[in-house]
Image (tube, rainbow, N blue to C red; front, top):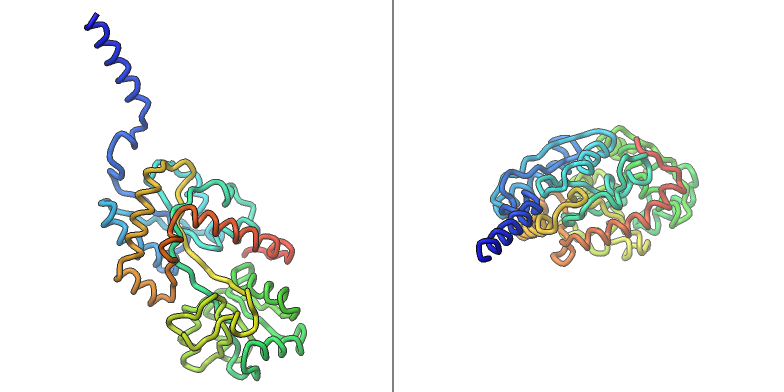
Length: 327
C-alpha cells in the first residue's frame, strides 16, 4: 500500500509539473530580453529606449537587445510587438503617436487599446506655442486676438501631416475659434527653418528642438502646453497662466508588452523601469533631452492604462471629426 501510494503521489507531482510553462519553471529572466523600437536608430524614441534599457539591464541581470522595426508611422514595429510571444522576453517602447493617434487614423491589424499589456509610463515632453520673431503679439492672448483678426490667413507649420503638431493646431482652432492655414513639412527641421525666416507664422511643437531657438531670439515663445512651467525654461508661462486654460498637450513615451505576458514578468520589468527612472544619471540624461519623468506614483501599469484610455477618449473624436490622416 505504501508503495502504491508513493507511486500515485509521484505521478501526480510529475503531471502537475508538466502543466507549468517552461518560463515559469525557471527564474525570470533567464536569457536576454528584446525591446522593439518602432522608429529609426538615433531618433528621439530610440534614444529614450537606449537610455532606459541600459539601466534596466542592471536590475534584471540580463542584456536588453534593441530591435528597430520602422515604417508606417511606427505601426509596423508595434504590430510586431502585438504578435510577439507573451513570455516576458519581448517588450516595446511607444508614444502618443503609436498608441493613441495611429488607432484613429490607420487601419491596424491590432487594437491599441486591448492587444497589449501596459508596463510603465516613462517621460512626457510638452509642446510650445511659438511664432516668428516679427509677430506683433506680446503674449498669448494678443496672439489669439491677432489670429482672429486674420482668419484663414495665418499659417501654422507642422512636421508632417497627421502628427501631434497638426492635432494641436486643430484643437487650437476648436478652442479659440481661429482659422489657420496648415502647412505640412517633411520633418520638423524644415518647418522650424521657415518659421525663423518668417515664411510661416506659428508652430506648436515639442520643447526639445524649440528652446535653443527661443533662447537665441530667433523665434518667440508664448506658452508651454503643460500644467506647470518647464524646469529648463521657467520664464515661459503655462497655457493656464497665459489665458488658454486646459490646453494641455504632451508627447509622452511608455513601455508595453504583448498581451498575455505573465504577471511576474510584468512586475519585474516594471520594477526595473522604476529603478532606472530613479537613477540620478538617467534622470540627468533625460532632462538634457527636455523630457519630464512621470512621478513615481504614475510609473505603474495601471497608470499607463488609465492615461492611454483618457487620451483616446479625448483625442479620437477630435481627430476623426477633423478628418486628420496620417502620412
